[in-house]
Image (tube, rainbow over all chains, first blue to last red; front, side, top):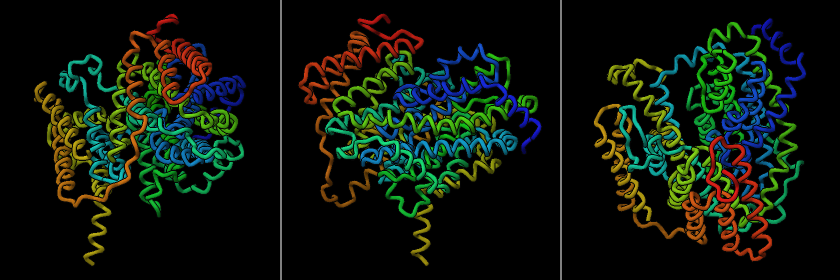
Length: 497
Length: 140
């Protein structure tokens, strides 16, 4: 629980030096801009600005980087809602309902809801972290590769079964994605599925593939449309409507709390947390809804579920970084580099000896969330003006930006070529009822799933009965079976009785 | 068409599995690929059987393809030509061609917008990225 002496020291560290706030403000703005530009990544922003932190003390460096992280976490939802381009894998589920809301002219509400859910989620997530950092660090230590493999399979199956009308096609999509995610060099030291191309030796670039499947395919479809929002009267970006959307979040408080809990715990799983947390939260909310058929068609609860989970998964990944020194993803990997630049190693010892710094980081993030509300409400109306741009200008501009961004992600032509290839795949999948989200998540997590299976095999010495010694794995696998067959089983039982 | 896509996916997955097996039969190489391929092939077979056995459904309203193939061809040309045209000239030409194809006939807008967008994006990304981008006019 909370150590109050350290908490007071943390507060002093944060509030007695006004320079800390001079760093946080530009950090949030940098994050917002990088998150909102399709193709740019939060981790890229953090990496670009990492050298700047060399001249700061450790606390300031962490405040600056976490401010970029917080701003970018929300910024990614802006292109997801307005253009169906999830800037990061953690904003995938935001696009499911955010983009249909935009197409219906409810973009202001969707953006306000995303801002509200993100900020409330960050506050809840870091609040939870403040209370539970000790427990979470112990919990993360117990998550082994078998649990990780099971979580990935569960996530992909859930997305596959729920994101399309045809469950079978959904699961096929997810599993095909999983296989695509394993292309390239394997642990056995051989290349698979590369067709002799040197570009594929490191695997299919996942983020360009995601941009191609989600964004480029949708933009090609939108070539036939005049404006993103068809009705002229609805093409507005009124701060008052965005503020109303922000307040609407509080009518979905249960969804936020559930999303935040999923975000903190799943987000703390290294490597996969943020990609899965938003999807699990979305799928859980959809399953629990009285009318699941409205999801994917512009249900605000979908945006709330996704944004509350992805913003709190940031808190979860910070817990893993602070408690174990293991980065949860690209952004926390850059933070780990900042740790190394300041000769600091994360882990239980760091938490024990530098508790005041840990508390300062957590409280700074809570404050950043409040600042983000102000910045978001000021900047969203400017960014939302994109809906006034005719599609004949918007489509080629965003496609070109996606190509610039994908080159930035890979450093060679493999990024743009991947966007091109997967835009065609995404377009075909959408037309024929296959699940694009399931394929994308499969591609993102294929490598991690294979690695987890290999580690499980190595730890168990090849004995598959090892799974039965892992109660958490069994629970997740049971959840997987229930989520696929549960409804059918219930219906069969009801019919027989 | 649905069945063709299912068959194509099954063929792709089978080819990938065979390629992985021919590279190495070591368990570390096929621990995920082999079982997942088996499951995908089984699911594809079930899907095909379902489609074959199900009475043909009433004709559904399919969204018209419209300009999508032309847009995709233009987009493909833009990406493939990037190593020669560079990001600056390539993106400018792509924007000009796309605008013209989509009905924009005001040449000042076509030239003005394409030039402004392409040069701003090229300069921004060129300055932000740590590696050189292919460029024809701007220095890489």
